[in-house]
Length: 109
Length: 114
Image (cartoon, rainbow over all chains, first blue to last red; front, side, top):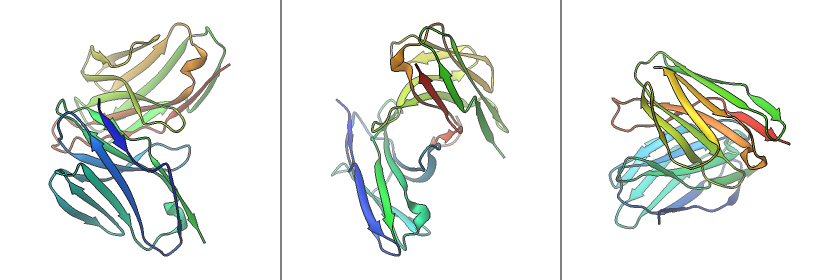
């Protein structure tokens, strides 16, 4: 079966750094996405990785290792507005997106 | 620029009543269109997707149906709602031209079936 694993909940302090991990087992791989979703709102696109390595975009970075079936989202200089759920999704061999359940990130002052 | 809009935002319906959620996309043509459902603590579940007018693929057998009467319009329907249909419904589109295929979501529709 296809599976995406990510922690259910994480807590971090304002101004700090947090890393949200995602491991996957899918039938094929055609890219990995990270989305941010605030409570009661729709997900918004954060990043896309298809090759191994680190993609940096401002305070957010995303890393991919295809051989390990592993990705992480790194958030720096945390702000209160970063409190949200972060969804990991993998595009499989049929180009269908398989979604993780999301990681709820709580930022404390 | 492209926009996506879905409505209604909130809906409370009795069991056995019909449902119609509508989604429209502006600023692009021939988009891929999707209906997802999101239950609390679970990943997004793909319900239907469409690559063109009248072309609908169903991912999950259920009492829901979808239609695409126009290129940028996608409708989710049910003739008789079940309690288990409660959830957060999301319409999304992606470009058939972009390599990444990232999804752009509508605002979401919160359905409560009583």
